Length: 213
Length: 247
Image (cartoon, rainbow over all chains, first blue to last red; front, side, top):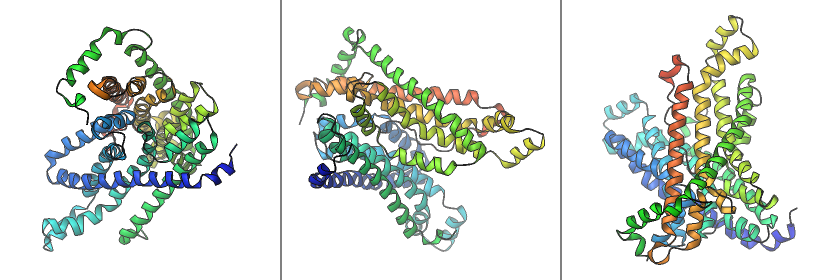
């Protein structure tokens, strides 16, 4: 059922597809964070903005992935940029919400104690609130990362790389050759599991105080 | 790079496309695509509910194997639906059951997890009170656990149904019908010049997204209607991600 010799001959293709998949996941999640964390902070500071920010990112999220990639073509063509923009948009709702929920999870006493100790708003945000919001924020990053790993596969419709291309171009389109299909699927699942475990490790690293609870 | 789609008259192009009577009749007409889309979606949601509801409720009721089930469904979530469709289609070419199977696989995890968690998190005191009143087994399940868990159970079904509607467009990728055809056919026509295929793509996306939103609203109403009156005040599930258009 699996042609192991084919895998042996194509380790380069498989490796480059995996690398592309990683880049196409990491970039959107990082860009999404750069946009979502300030938006989430803004929405927390100015509650009037919370509803529109969430509504806009929620509406963008309902655009079918199939079409989202295609919409980018008139603007950025059949490029990696198109895929990265489309995927970044999908991470927004999860990350904005995680930022808002994370900041809301900071106990009121802690915030007041920080204020009483003389923290200015900016310092309080950076040194007290954001660190305490990390567990919720990282939970959001985990969701965004795993779902982006899955969404990258849809990029085959605009011909971007990644493991979807391995499955589609090297397997599906070549007379349903199963080996690359199974390989791509296994690697996508493996990437999701590894990325999730890595993020859990990062969380433990960054929140030493929550260990041993 | 493409001036056409960005010109103001693009809206006119969109309006012209949708108001053309040819769009509304025949096998490639919007009504037929909508029916196909609804067929995949309703069918897959019902099958997924028929599998995941009894299983999740039973696991929650007995409290056994629950973590195992959650672990398995979590790994399942990592499998992109498009890849699953390609895999199954390669194994059983041109069989429409492939679409149902892939959509069911997408929908089972949220329904299962919510049913399990819903039953598990029934207040132990409520359960003890029911046991003290002499309720046993299925009676406890039917009269206490399921009604109390209904908001969570239904929100799992709603999440899944919306995801299915948003994802059923992928059926077109392997040549089946549904609203995804508008997107795929539009892409096949190309975008050059005055947006030949683009109106079709845009309308396909808008219709799929609108159908997903309608599904969400409709099932939110159903959820409220089946929630026992005494629970309604607490019934709004805390901040939920408006689920749609995943893989």
